[in-house]
Image 1 (spheres, rainbow over the protein chains, first blue to last red):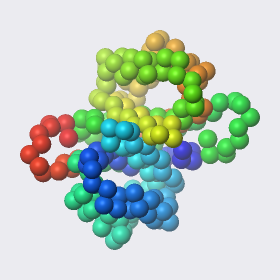
Image 2: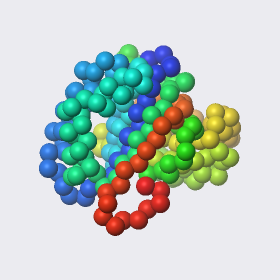
Image 3: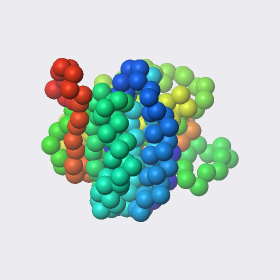
Length: 116
Length: 116
């Protein structure tokens, strides 16, 4: 789960349907993109889930639209996007949204996690 | 995958960690909430995924903040939220965000889907 900074900030909601069988480096590339994104200016966090039906949602959080645009121009990210379209995804949607309100709830069981 | 209306509209990004074992009606209640949400004024769509680690992301889309507030006040939805906190989730975050830009890509393989 991603940290919860004080709004406003920006979310990139990436919803994708994986191709049924083609692995061809997907896992390694996805991990590498998470690692690379975390090094970018304005990066605030990421969270993702993919179900057994192959539908996945990844939400990354950024300080500003300019930070998102810069990440979009990143050369290694461009190459990964090309692979995504040629091999890994049958379709996807991408939405850029300004987070206006945010809150967290956590079970009170003694668990400590400053990011929850 | 949810339809892609013309921005601006609103997204509710709900990220949740499921409790390890407690099923106690979760699946039926989750299905019922999707059904009920779809009947509310201003509802535009929903998409969700949950991975094997129990982390799930559900994003619902709404015409306006007032529509989200009305759904939040829905009595049956309130009861489900109480169950969520008592039984189903160990933690969650909720973010309300204004979608400013959106686009879709789909593999050109003859598949037809007007929502993609």
